[in-house]
Length: 199
Image 1 (tube, rainbow, N blue to C red):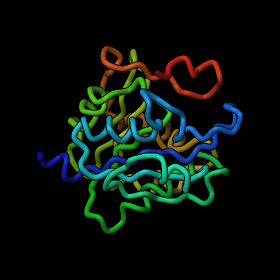
Image 2: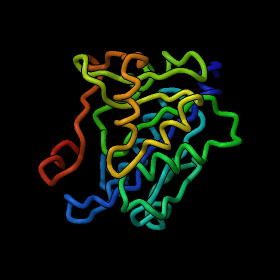
Image 3: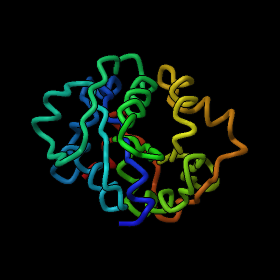
């Protein structure tokens, strides 16, 4: 286990209710025969994340029952309907006291982003002041790594469905972009049409 793997915790935002998918929670969408959240956990594990926190919201009890999430820390977000910002805050708050020095945040609905991209972002971690983002043809995307020095600011700025967007825009000059367009496809599963990406 490398030092990076010990110090960086993975945080998967998996609370969404799939409003544009007829109310089907994204965590429970099937991909390769298993719930999408299980796939997301597998990606982070394959990339080297040994500690993973999963933020749940919509139908959390069903997700816990159906998905095999092993020793992940499951974080309930009772305010999930207020948007992704609440899940990001809950995920970061859950790392308090764990010894983690950075959080690698990924979204449950981006199965085209695999372990290779996550490994690249993880590999750019260089301490608590790190601010690293995957980029696709030069455009910032996910996953994003926040050193612990940024957590308070990110949580304070996370509102509605914006997540960390405002904070990242404000600190754009400090973000280290890691190009991943050659190893991943950053599509989201947001609408019925997007379901073609699931296998």
